Length: 386
Ligand code: COA
Image 1 (cartoon, rainbow, N blue to C red):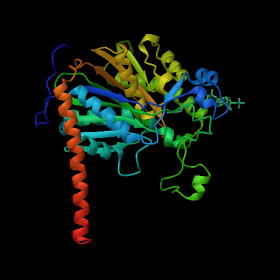
Image 2: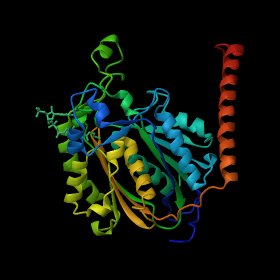
Image 3: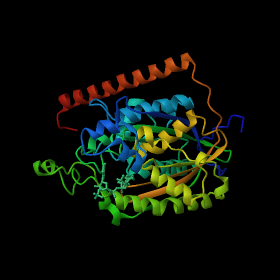
């Protein structure tokens, strides 16, 4: 598809609408932690981690970084790529298991930082499957005509929730974010169909026990390390290898395609052995499979958009290819989706556009501060009266 696809505004007409990806962006923190670095903390080795997982290194948040700072940067990059103004975004979904707070949502913090004044915003927690759940929800809202433009973000600072003395978990995870801008178009394509599933009976396999209403924070929960991720790795491994292939087959079937129509397979980047098992079951040639976990580890909800951004940069994903995405995670949750990568690569922003965009974000920050000041003045003047 070479011509520019026309944007479709929400309307009363029943003309079909499709949810195309028009912008994408990723952000990872600068700090790199290698397997050798981890072997100084727990009894493990680079050789063991690489053989059992395929991971060589991961990015780790610094003290001043968090899930929202990653999400905001990835979102800004995606919006710049799409040349879409934050004011045109109708919906922001942030998939994360390491939110900034229990509430307010990380999505609202992102909304404020972007100055996305016309957007609804919420977090979505389907663990590592969150990005596919988010794409599915955003695409459906676009297809029904509820909205025109959505920002779907997967962002994690999970290393802050790791027990760095537990070698069963701390070797696996990394931090970062990826974001997509989805927009309504009248031409068929974009996010086609998905298959989403869950099985709550497997919840204890991968859990962060404390900090919620079941186990509020107390001195005891802190002393007992209950605020860290706990995982039964073998159970999760067996579950993942059981569900991935069938989820993909169902998403492909629902999209009216055959497995041979799939050009690129983007699996959740948790473990190379899990990816290999799924690729083998689906009879996919290695060149069709995107693997980025050696550099980033498992970035949970961010893993699929980061993998896609990396594959685009390397030239593995090209225009007009059909992508099959699949993920699994805590919940238990799993899901697959089919995405036509069919919008022409956007022209790089001009200096003027970049300057305008930066000005917009600065102004959004000023307005946010002003609103906070007004709120505190109101509280001083009116006290508790309405
Ligand atoms: N370094 C060295 N040895 C380790 C180790 C580590 N980091 N972690 C575990 N071991 C040891 C175990 O103690 C065990 O020793 P034992 O045989 O003496 O009891 C041995 O290695 C094998 O342990 P096992 O748990 O069977 O390893 P595994 O091959 O299943 O690999 C995982 C462990 C965690 C890498 C693997 O189970 C996995 O990736 N599971 C899926 C996890 C996942 O994807 N989670 C995120 C979901 S979104």
